[in-house]
Amino acid sequence: MERGDLTQLLDLAAGGDSAARDALLVQAYEELKKLARSSMRRESPGHTLQPTALVNEAYLRLFGPEARWENRRHFFGAAAQAMRRVLVDQARRRDAGKRGGGLERVSLTQVDVASEDAQVDVLALDALMAELEAINPRLVRTIELRYFGGLDIEATAEVLGVAPATVKRDWAYARAWLLERLSG
Image 1 (cartoon, rainbow, N blue to C red):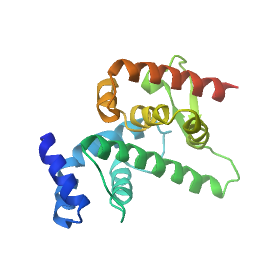
Image 2: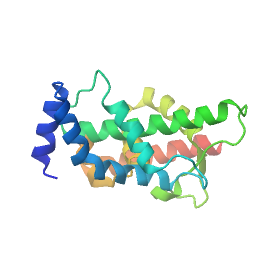
Image 3: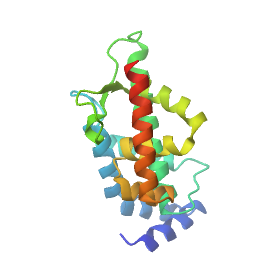
């Protein structure tokens, strides 16, 4: 998929062109599915949501009435954020009837975290990310893109519009910050 083609489709879709939205989904589908597979690899065994369903749910959120993307970076950043919201909402629905039992487990080890057995539930991670957002929103975007979106350092830097070295620093700080709070 050419970057210019996707950017042009994003512009047309943002303007309300439904054919462009359909074409955008077709062109971006494989990249979105790759993001979803990455997110789903860190879910606990027996998780009921499949990558295709995650893409479909994220798509519905991405193409809501106020859907506007400035460019390719913005679109894929929004996709990672939408996938995060879908996973958090599903964990909340599942836990609502259990009064906190059977929390959704997510491993931070799959994305190069120092601790080999670091496990986290999606709801705890989301709550900490909301706290971190007040301190440094870019750190939260970095977590969304790397952890929920499965992007590497370079792709995350492209989406955020910063240098890869900045993403490495932010990622190291964000992981340390999260792990400290999750282990305490």
